[in-house]
Length: 75
Image 1 (cartoon, rainbow, N blue to C red):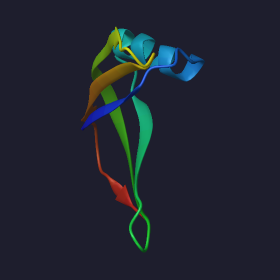
Image 2 (tube, rainbow, N blue to C red):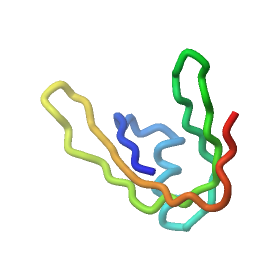
Image 3 (tube, helix red, strand yellow):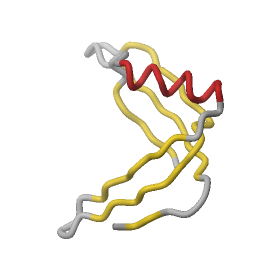
Image 4 (cartoon, one colour):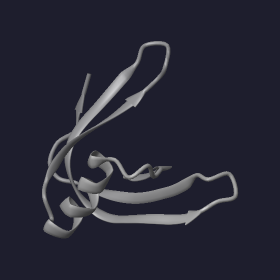
């Protein structure tokens, strides 16, 4: 699973890097905002996490990937 976002240096985002280095298995959710929202829940390892350079508008991007471990629960 790949993801992108804006890096804001929050405690949660900083924990992503720590978990990647320590190979900590964490629980994640992806919520699909359809007419009937669907949530996919799963455990995964963070395999990559990178912080981009600051852009002209002041936003800093980040991206990463997860390796799913075990079943995915759909609700």
